[in-house]
Length: 306
Image 1 (cartoon, one colour):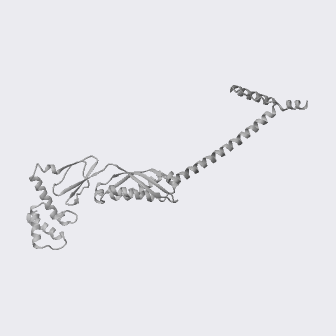
Image 2 (cartoon, helix red, strand yellow):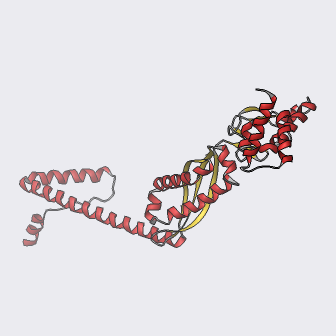
Image 3 (cartoon, one colour):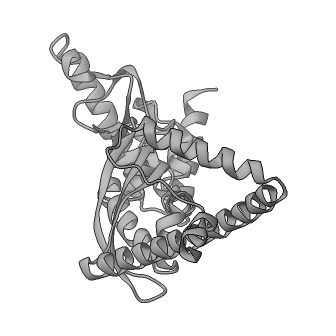
């Protein structure tokens, strides 16, 4: 393609760039720059999706300045990001196509580019104790811990000012909202279910921020002192009631066993004598100084008649 046809084509791009006819001076400047600068036609056709004509001029000027000041400028162009980091590069305020860069080496233009490092490691933070009114009107203090990481560095930089602070505030609000729908007994017994519900809610809410909530745990549930005393008294009374029931059942079983033993002894008179001798043997083995020696009532009746 000849230079005349190329300049004519780029002049047509100048006419289309804003959707209306430009002035003679602007068209002349555009044609001159199209001959001396390697600007792609897509940049002139879609100025809203690219950096535009002035942007390309500044970028090319920055490249020329970098080439002139070599090798000093090379130290300002080379950047390094670690394995657990990603770099978001802004060129004239726009994020470069291709998303996050790294890990390793990458190049920037000193005058037109800037970058932000994003840590991709898992971050842990404690949820401060939250005073929550449960569904059955009991005030409890609950705290927890949240594990999250940046899944999409571009969204974490472009869609929210401070992803860490926003996630912390959202975790506190979610904890209060979830516990407000639970009874005290459910909070004390269903901690895993509450943690899973919080994780799902936080993960859905932070998806547009490029955040992935990996785990949520409930650390401690603190009850008011009066409620602790009432629950302790209730538990003690319940234990005493169960102890009395167990003792009564033991007495009933013992009485049944004694009844059966008496029936067996009544069938054989010698069994009573053997039981008597066994009882004396047991008492003597304990080295007691006092031994109770029972006498049959028949012997006492004989002495009374005389």
